[in-house]
Amino acid sequence: DRVWEIARLLAGGPPLVFAAIKEVARAAETMGFQETMNRITKRQFRTVDELYASEDNLEGFKAFAEKRDPVWKGK
Image (tube, rainbow, N blue to C red; front, top):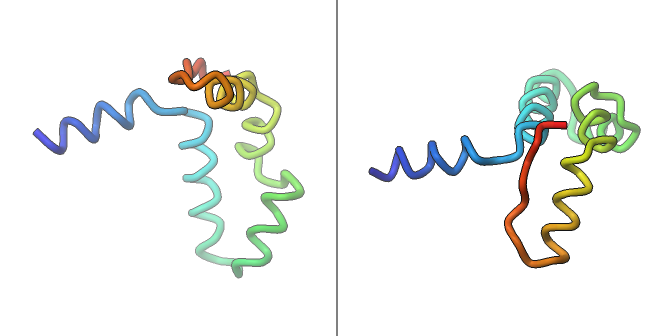
């Protein structure tokens, strides 16, 4: 039951964030922490750049400010 609960939680999560996490985690295996953070800050990862420029990024902030659950579109 707990596994299905977690699976449903992840399935309803922000797809662009999950993509960015996967890309950064894979790249971080071969570089240091500071280099990884610098590349994130400079938007040098494709998925991070897409996330920062996305509708979902704005939706996350709006939902937090409005104290409601976000509606992720993957855009």
